[in-house]
Length: 397
Image (cartoon, rainbow, N blue to C red; front, top):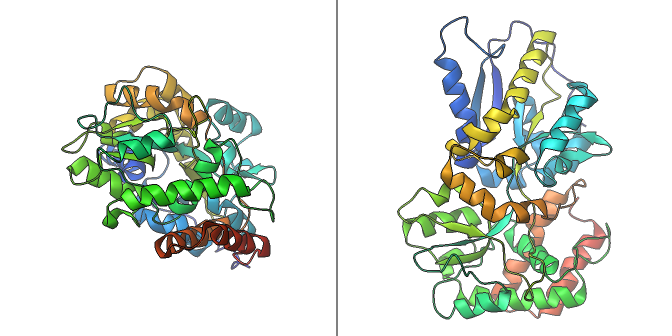
């Protein structure tokens, strides 16, 4: 159980926010803070200033939110950790801050399952700030962006011609297994204690992962997608990655701007397996607040989710908005328009991971098991057995 809430704070000078140390997330937030600070006295648009701090993005995927929530007012969260956060009692439900009509409006305006990803037990625990999903990334100077690989077999064929990398660091070995199962038309983890993936889909996926892992440069075999994208943009990485979390900023930054496309399917014309990511804004339940402080929190959340901020400021600062209008409408940023046009369908069809307690720990352990097994050349049926045993026991909770 968490500690009792702190005494109600009065006369708060500023709000504290915690963002991920990833430009896609922190850049728009810090730009708004900078703009606020530049306004003359009396021209403020929010009741209290909001000072953002950063945490390593990798920690956001593995560290429970309850470990740091009480130190902040507004927290950027990932939906796989939602179940554990709600169970710990460290988050304030959004219906305690906003009327149902306002929440419904945000749901209607969000892209894909972005809003739904922060709902659990019939309540919303965060609001969608940023939308991302697994995409294919390529260097247009080395791979024809008008004709990228359409199937995973074509990815293997491309790997005979140019460097190709499969990113398996952090939770991404498990997420790759899920994406490959989805590409075969099978949803992973349909039962809480059942098989993680079907036997046939799992074995086919592991065979493909082993083939492409063998083609991946050794330094990138345990890298996460962010490392691969940085290397690609510097010109020191692969020419093509079939599964990375898309980042629009790489379409215009770096020595070698990148392009993103739909991930490959298992067969021609088949579905593209993609696992939803993104970032949400949650409010800590552990910091006592007076009415004025709560009003200031509402002001900041409303502004961050407003159409002008999502549609214009986010793309211009390298963010990826969760508002669907930013993906479908005209933006002042040409690079964002190209990215959103090429990837909207994938974002809207992306698979939503479970959010039950402990899931963030499970995906980390599952990835470690898969990485170690592929490195050791373990029989693929034995790898699936170990994964299913861990899942059925619920030992990861």
